[in-house]
Length: 352
Image 1 (cartoon, rainbow, N blue to C red):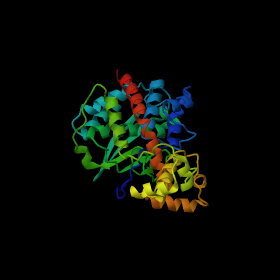
Image 2: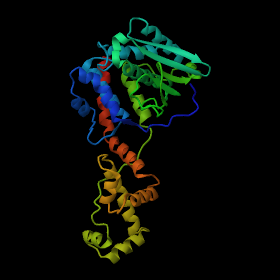
Image 3: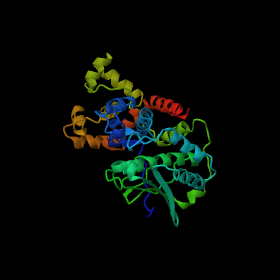
Image 4: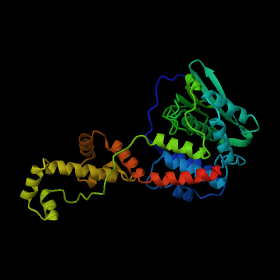
């Protein structure tokens, strides 16, 4: 295992396939996936990707509804209170190494998951193993879910994103080599589920504060970390039916000469106005992922998609696909306060 290539940040975006995967156990327990998605503000008809906050809310809702730390994936339920206890054990320690060793001892007392530390020079492996009698075919998914839970706790413990080097998994459905949607480190197939990090991190001291609402404190910190990259808001929807000067002047009730004179006086031009309008319209249209870039180009009056791509790249410095990602994030920003409030309500209730 080497840490030569650093993973790129995944910009707060999660493939919606992860939402389907993490809701499988709850659905098997009789919950409605449609309801779980609705509560989590997830619309599979328009979203190919969702935010980390939506994933957190989906998981917390499933935990609350099933009273199962493992979202219904195991052969029996593990009370959600054990999740709270796990975090409280961590926060009672002074260093990362002591926190992890305390959790290892906790798991040695009849827990269906075993965790351990293995150091190899400058890198250390935090591994998770699920008992086959508990996880069965869902074992790899449970291991990855728990590894992510530990990662969230470690982020709060050190007061920043924990320095993950790589993630190994037994889950063959996971996208390999790409950064993990949550831990933001390259994913590799291995014989054990594990998080690799610099050995020096074991000596880091606790920065996060113990609190009665430890679950919410950890999740709020995690959401803040994953929401670090902000995108420009798309603004109000823009009509692009009449972008020629004469039609626009008719709408404004002024002559073309007056329109040009006012633009010149303000240091602007119709060409610049048209460009800004097309970019704003593109942001609005690209936010709906059911619409292809070719369809959008045609709607905006371009004879071919290549011309449209050249225009967007020249006007914004990014491609339509990158602009779509920005529009997606901006659209989610309006929902974030509602999502955070829902996560907090569940977290506080579980901590009581």
